[in-house]
Image 1 (tube, one colour):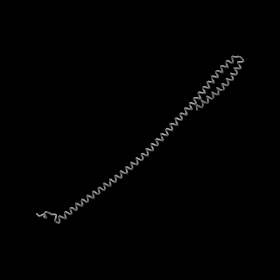
Image 2 (cartoon, one colour):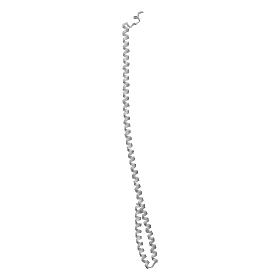
Image 3 (cartoon, one colour):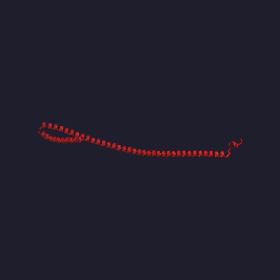
Image 4 (spheres, one colour):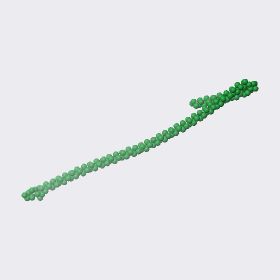
Amino acid sequence: GSFQDEGSISSPHSTVSMTASVKEKLADIERQRAEKRREWEKRMEEQNRMIAELRSMFSQASNANSQNMTLDIEVTSLRREKDEVEATRIKDREEAEAKKAKVEATLGKARAEAEAETAKVEEILGKTREEVKKAREQTKEAEKKATTARSRMEDAETKAKHLQKTTRDVEAREAQ
């Protein structure tokens, strides 16, 4: 056997056959490359789409965070405003209670003074009555003194009535 008899490369048939085979392999390689390029482009498109989605989600999260911060500021402001209103209300209540206590003290003092005056008048009335009694037991000269004493008693009774009326007026005002 010669070399050509065994299907050597130099024969025209075998060269064409190999060229077709090489061309087919090159075409396969080219198809695979094109397919790989399409797959790569699809992956890149998918990655770009995912990146865009992530950016959108990040932007939404950022907006939500910004809105939360705004709400936190508003809530803090409303709390501060509520605390100021509460402090004012407490201050107003304390002032009202202080005024009420002052009025009650004044009324108590006025009542005590009226009671003291009434007691003084009652004491004067009692003494005046005793003087009148003693004066009746004395002579006609003593009757002059008794007349004077009666006059003093009438004045005292007038004062007592006036003070009793004043007391009733004060008590009526307190009752209102």
